[in-house]
Structures are given as structure tokens and as C-alpha cells.
Length: 317
View 1: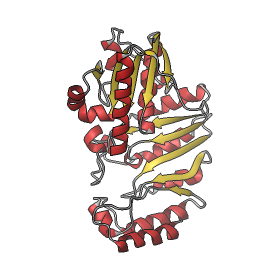
View 2: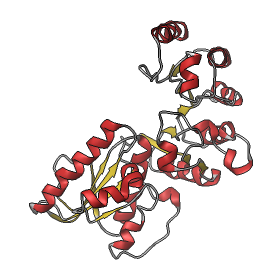
View 3: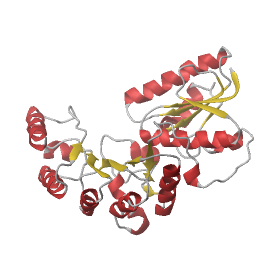
View 4: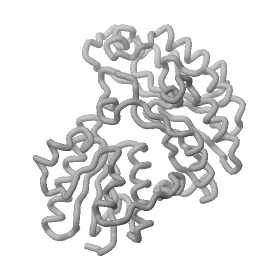
């Protein structure tokens, strides 16, 4: 075990990665040396940032915790802490089943870890609290937490709660600070980025936010991830088309096209509305690249529903 070394292990999505980067910066400010996803785990302190979204991810998180418990018992690592979505949702169960972990934190209280280790609370501007683990030219920017949607298959609202937008000036300050550190490409992430601002004043402000990010000197590329098709803010298309450094790219999860399956999924959008939206997106931003996720085998899906989805994929390209 290496004294003064913190090993951070991140599981799950890019939103978890941002949390890990925030924690690493706090540890480093306190004088620790941090290693992210090291091939050889041997830190005095090990923190696992877990995923609790789907069954395979939950099992992978649990298996990783158990492997590290063994490493702790063998003296190869020191203290073991767990944070993230899995422990946010199943904290009491985990404490009962795997008591060897020194402490469990959830999705939002992990910054308390340093205080629990005896380090003084030292507030720092949020923009300076990131140790970027991605290649130095790009970084993720998380613009909100939580989700107000209630899709039948998704546990995210249960884990993270309602949608909460970050203050716009805080986001812009983070982008400016990262530009000064050499970051050129910004991947904009949220559970549902088109909902940005609704919790603040009832209006969608994603187009304004992206336009302001694009106007920051030194921002070379802006890429948008995790949009939702229901009530899509069409003014965002104007920003994508008109700002040369906003990539002609959109990650928009559709999940299915059959009205039967969309209704069962509680997606609050129809086949007709989805196809009309795709046409508007392609008309509004010629040459745009669309990325999506689609789910097959949802309970109640028929062969006819599946064939309808295959035909849609061909049509939507």
C-alpha cells in the first residue's frame, strides 16, 4: 500500500466521471496524490464510484467492491470507501451485506469524505474543482442533475431525484477555466439536457446556454449528448446550425418507434411526433449526424412492433 495515495475507480457514465474528477481535485488540494482507474490498485485510500443503472452494471460494481474488500483484508490497500448511484439507492443493504467498507456515500454527499478524514472544509470555486481524466483536449461539462421524466424502464429519477439545473454563470466559469488549461472540446452532458432551465423559471434555456458556451474564446468544439424527443426545443437547431464550433451532431435517445411500445415505456411521444421531429432536425441542420439508442424486447413488444422499428431505422438512417 502506498501512503498518501488515493485510488479512484469510476464505473458507469460520464456524469459519474465528472463527480470523480471533482473529488480528485479536492483530495489533491488537501495534499494527496490521486490515481484514476489504475491497473494496480494499492492506495492508502480507495474510492469506488459505483453505477446502479442496470443489472449488469450493479453486479460489476458489487464484484469490484468485493475484490477490494479482499485486497483490504490482505493489506494491499488501506481504507475503502464507496460512493455513487449504487450506494445512493442501496446504502442500507450494502452496509448490511458488505460491512467491511469503511463508509458508504451517495450520489451527492461524497464531498463529505474529506471532512470525515479530518481535512478542513475549504470552499473553492466550482470551476476549479476538476482533475480532468480525459485526454487533455476535451472534457465533459455536466449542466444538471436528476430527471423529471418517468420512463417505465429507468431508475435514474429514483436514484438522483428531480431535475436540478446548474447556474448558468457557474457552467460558463467552468468552461472558461478549462479553456485556460488547454481544453478545446466540450461534451455537454445531463440526464436530459433539453430540460435545462425549466426548474429555474419554467422555460428551456439550453439554446441560450450552448450559444454562450460557443461564444467563449478558445472553445473549438461543443458536442451535445442525451437529448429527449418530447417537446424538443427547436431553437436549439438554430444554434447548432449557426455556431461554427457547435458540432453538427445530436445524441437523442428514441428507444422505440411503435406507439404500442412507446406508450408502455411512458415516453410521452408518438411515432408521428418522432418522425416529424427528425425531419425538422435534418431540415434545420443540413448534414447533421444523429446518434440514438433503441431498446428491443421490451415487455409487450410484438413481432409487428419490432418490424416497425427495423423499418424506422432504415428510414431515419
